[in-house]
Length: 231
Image: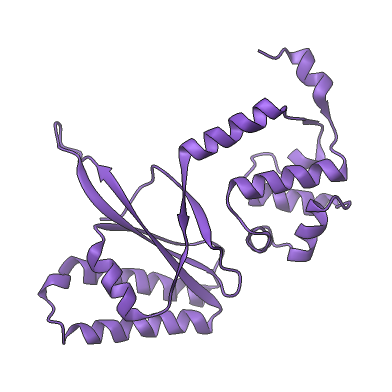
């Protein structure tokens, strides 16, 4: 175990090059692109590239990055920093991999495809990956509410009647696209237990519908292995 004195000896202000390495490590652990980090921090992609490239940055930039990483102390990058050892970095990555799973982010562009995915899923986790404007936020919420309502009664629709569902879902998807929002999806098989004592584990398929800025969609994303899900 490391003593307080040992940590104090390793604690110092980061050089711009070291800060760049730390920022890149935080970003890659979360499976974020530089564009996503820019969106979440309110900084330009060029600024993210400069910081990760070891260029000097100002106080506000470092605070914005700390907020994006949800670090409790927003001045963490402006204070003496305990330089992690290689073992600590490996342990941090192992902890992240243990607590999270990486899923492939597939494009979602048609109402028919979304309806088919909803029919096969037992539950979903649907959320924007960045802060939406009010209009886009409402549009995304309406889309999620609509397909959840459809999932609850999909079996009563005839194949012909489903075309009206496809059309409504498509209208929401197109409206989001017009607002600069692109949808990606992933599916994941899990085993869950109910809240009743002695309940048997039940296999389920979880649908993820995630909103990203158009043109900045990732090929994959990380999500916690254990999360609250909507039936």
